[in-house]
Image (cartoon, rainbow, N blue to C red; front, side, top):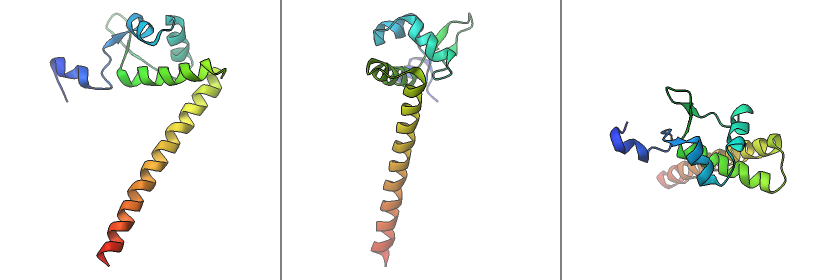
Length: 108
């Protein structure tokens, strides 16, 4: 586990404030609050209760924003992102199994 400044390289380290996140994503803070309220994106909270976002969370918010821009509802966008993630996981597993199968075939 990185410490100090090295934590900034961690995709899951909540280093970005809501204002910074909104600015980076070119959205209003209300957009981020709506993702939080819907349970799509749950930022960590600072000691004072302020939302803090990680790079991984900003990537998810970007994906959601792109789907909103295409006219999707919040529920539809969340479902699409969930299905995309499941498909990526399945594809990665298929690739692992194909590699194992090739290695097994080479041993015979």
